[in-house]
Amino acid sequence: MNLPNKITVARFFLVPVFAVIILLPYDWAKIAALVVFLIACLSDFFDGYLARKKNMVTDFGKLMDPLADKLLVCTALICFVKERDNFPAWCAILIIAREFIISGIRQIAAEKKQIIMASIWGKIKTVTQMILCVLFILDIDNDYSYLAQNLFVWIASFFTVLSLVDYIIKNFDIFRKATK
Image (cartoon, rainbow, N blue to C red; front, side):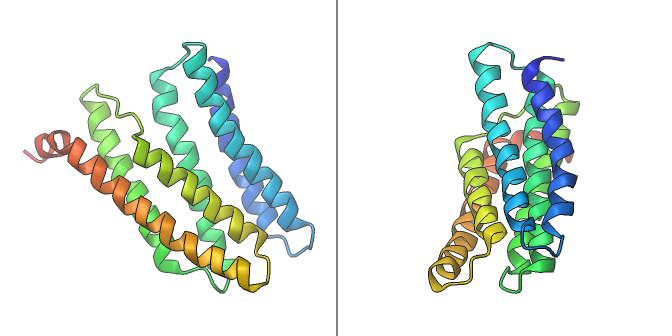
């Protein structure tokens, strides 16, 4: 297993650490959860950069890297629905539903020996969702923070839907062939 893939696997182990910390009832937990979340986000950038720069892109990485991102973000969203009064459940449901749909399309493609790479819209979606998560992890109690949180609920939701539509259009043949 190459270094980028090891970094991806390590990100999977950071997810339960993040979940436990963010649910702790201590003042320091927000900062600790933010640190773990940011390490996971930076590892996502670093493993992809390293894989492309050193020509270490693998099918494992193409499949598991986006899955690690999805697991991290979905875990955070579920925690926010439980812990933050102002996080809308519909946003979590929308984002998680999109991830299930895309994972299903990728599974169908994998069975046909095709790998679906992340599109630019998927990457923008991931960045906006990660910013959304950072805002809700910090959960600063002022009008500007509340405004930023609400704004990113809508921005992340928009790019979630846009990237879903993009994946469906670009991969419609895979989906159509699977239903025959």
